[in-house]
Image 1 (tube, protein in one colour):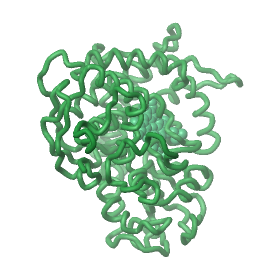
Image 2 (cartoon, rainbow, N blue to C red):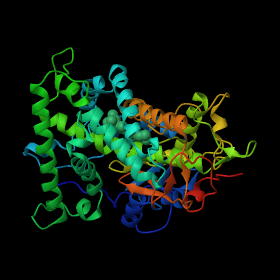
Image 3 (cartoon, protein in one colour):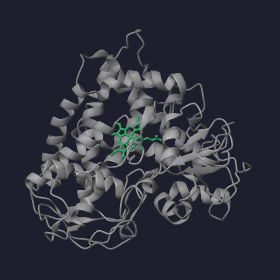
Length: 458
Ligand code: HEM
């Protein structure tokens, strides 16, 4: 019998939002930006904020000292079990076992075996793919028709992941396959799947398990093909041929789990990061020049733009949950009970006024010159031994695509209402369509919930 995700009997002697624990916990997961800003934000003086006052089932850790403690102490903070456990003994039982879910020695082993796929030499090949995908995209501006920004960013990042990670082209008709893989993790966060784990043909959980099995079969087929072929530059081929110094290698089940993990962790996060960088750029103005808030054709400003948009509107507003393995104090907090689910929040950390003056203002210039934030104060990719394994891949993809856009002409906003919220799992981004015109440039005054989070125009 799988373990329950939340143990609402746990207690912590700390103030927090009022309400029913199970309801608040689900709201944190399903509407994280709003819940974090409105309900957890007011408790900013506390190093540990329970999601419901006095209840120890789910807590959010705040501040540099706590962030550092959680990111560096993998023994006290395990990746949460009970969230994505699959029934044992089937070929597909390991589809959610990956570096992203592993703990202890198994986590270290997997990270080591995955490194060649995200190593600098692999990135060189990926850069050429990113540029080619850009040329095929609406952003390259073969025609002047308006298009929907987020859908196009998703198309670009999906093509890049399929080409770089799986060595497949969109033209192979496998784009729906990538969608199916990505949806598995998001569907697992559906309360009907999450809370009623009965493997029967008619339950949402049972139907979801069938989809997991189907995705595994397709991945296993691809893995067999790559193992039999000569080495290629895609991540799948690199993983099929990777052997560490002790002769250890990843099995078919393990590679399937890792590829699934890469798609779940990397596809929408990258697309939302790209979309949000464009939204902040197109929706901001530099009061000195009355022009756009940054010029991505300039490498220093491109760097500043990417960081500033990740600071203000992170695509991952809360990290993946960790399970507390022993009663543990953070800073001056009362002990967090063993078994609690713990989150860190890039969204809240990036809005600390002691670190970022006027945190709600979009100001890329804060990243140019000056000393910048200290370690553990800016955490869009996490940090420490669990830092995002795809950070360089994602960053290079976003920067390559934005700088090519700057060369060709930036898109301009047609719609100006932008809402920022949870789009899937822990990923946040624009929640309603945003129409843009290719190579139109300029900037627009934005409305919508996005302006609750930042002040685009001063
Ligand atoms: C801009 C896009 C991305 C963002 C914002 C992002 C963010 C993050 C964050 C915050 C974590 C740490 C979570 C934690 O400590 O709980 C993480 C972990 C991870 N990410 Fe990413 N990610 C992105 C893209 C990618 C891509 C493209 C891949 C794969 C190709 C990827 C693979 C992973 C993996 C495997 C982990 C788990 C590492 C571990 O537990 O050791 N991510 N990511």
